[in-house]
Amino acid sequence: MAIILVRTIRLFVQVFFWLILVRAVLSWVRPARPSKFYYDIQTFVYRATEPVLAPIRNLLPRTGMIDWSPLVALILLEILERLLVGLIYSLL
Image 1 (cartoon, rainbow, N blue to C red):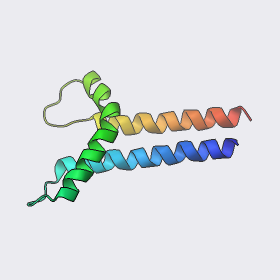
Image 2 (tube, helix red, strand yellow; image 1 turned 45 degrees about the vertical axis):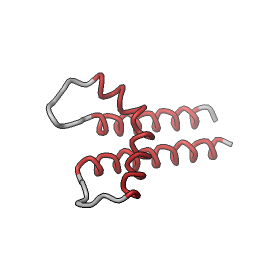
Image 3 (spheres, rainbow, N blue to C red; image 1 turned 180 degrees about the vertical axis):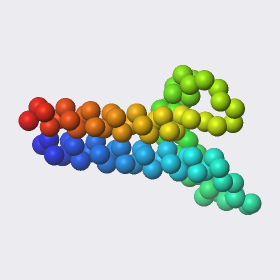
Image 4 (spheres, helix red, strand yellow; image 1 turned 135 degrees about the vertical axis):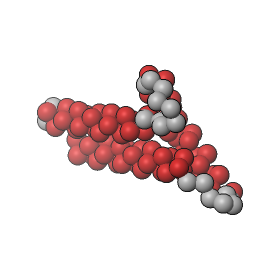
């Protein structure tokens, strides 16, 4: 049972990691002629990541045009994963 829980946590972290990474790349790259598919992906990624990134962004000081919230979120996500997995294994 613990293995399933650990794998689920790791899968969630990996999926969220990639969503944050895709969001960062989408903010840097603008296609010359964006398609509906591009906008659909962008909307999905922004809606999935904004509930986590917005509170972090509000806590961080303004640093011009660079948004550090994705980097902070990835670090916090990694720390949270290690804490949860460690806690699960320590309870065995």
